[in-house]
Every structure is written in C-alpha cells, then in structure tokens.
Length: 76
Image (tube, rainbow, N blue to C red; front, side, top):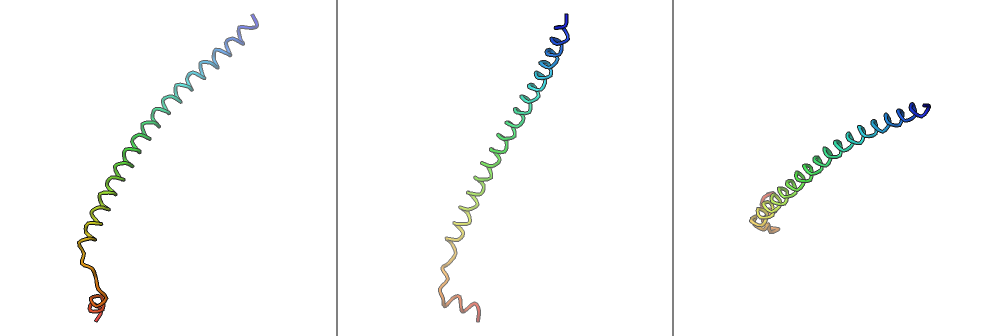
C-alpha cells in the first residue's frame, strides 16, 4: 500500500505536465500566427518601398540635367 501515494504523486505530476504541454502548444500556435502576420506585413512594406523607389527613380529621370553654367546662374 505504500506505492499508492507514490503513484498518486506521479499521476499528479503527469497531469501537471500535460496541462503545461497544452499551454505551450497554445502559446506556440499564437506565436506562429504572429510570425505569419508579421511576415505578411514585412512583405507588404517591402513591396510598398519598392513601388515608392520606382516612383522616385522615375521622377529623378524626369528632372533636367543641371549643367555647371545653370548651377552658377541660380547662385548669382
């Protein structure tokens, strides 16, 4: 009969471990969702940045080339 308390202790510990395992599974699932959301946000921001760069590059190409004489006329 001395084994009964030991078995009860083991069973209690196993129950606590199972609860902790389930908590860790839920935490892991939430973290995975956050990683996915942040990855999508990052990809969206990278896309927006690329589009903005393309617009800036297009605007820069439209600017007239400044010659040395034109640059000095503006300062006079």
